[in-house]
Length: 365
Image 1 (spheres, one colour):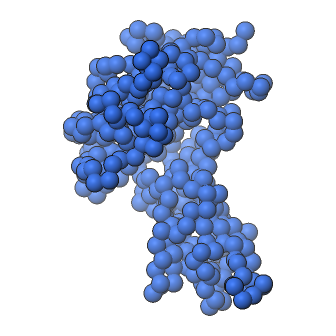
Image 2: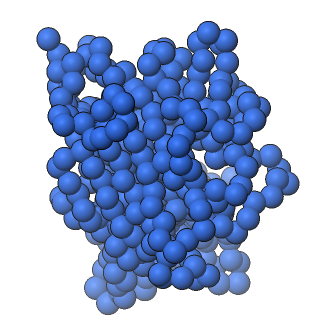
Image 3: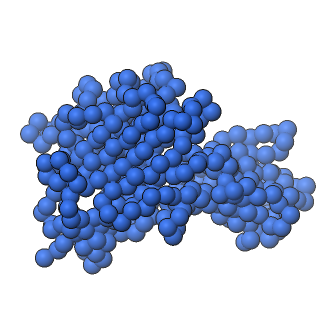
């Protein structure tokens, strides 16, 4: 008989969030705490900081000097890309001969890993692939891959059922006194207390409660943006199975009626949902990783396509929101859940979406 154990691990960016992280380049180059760039495989690179990575709270900014090799020969902008997805530069600063990439921590094919007990690491590479001009079949520079890592400190990693990270919001207009505390618990069937054991049999149901506690803050509403199950800590690895996707659609509910958000929620800062226990077929491994992305928005803001919690209702073959109008769930079918152009949002809501963070769960069988 198969048994499943669920163990939560915090993957929030905890502690003080710094505006820039440690940068490593060859000798003589300045460093910044908590970001890392490995240019060791590109020894021909200029020693004058040709690549600068700045890891912000929700994205990484990579600045590249077009004089990449320090020879005075400028590389072509179109020959530079970021990550396996081949993201193109966001900004080309012609006067300074630099290009800038802006990428969310989950964009461009970045890989998330838990490193030891102390850090979350988002990894991505800058790629330079020279192409010959239209009048030539030769190139005068070599391809270069520059690995980049964003390291974030992690606190309060617990081996029981709860995650209680604490972090300070990164926003110049938000007081440092305003702190958010996220937690994620396995609950009993009646939602009255935490579950005494984290062991499950296939066929049982997991009762999961997410919560955010705001101190000295205007009311917030908590959402689960996505949850992905994999057989390794990397959320982008294969095989992978989406439980929640498309910014709050509990897609597992299309295949199992036990997977649903609890309605109505009893507080805006709490979101409860159930998932039928499962395992990957055709694979003997007894450990499954589930990575969920949580976020908050202002409680006064009406739910929309980007901020929602939608369950599939088999009896009516339709999607039903925990709150808000049913049309916000229509994108769960179209799989294109983006905000309508021109639809406004408050500063607090924008801040709230930027504060979305990852939570990982480890399921052992």
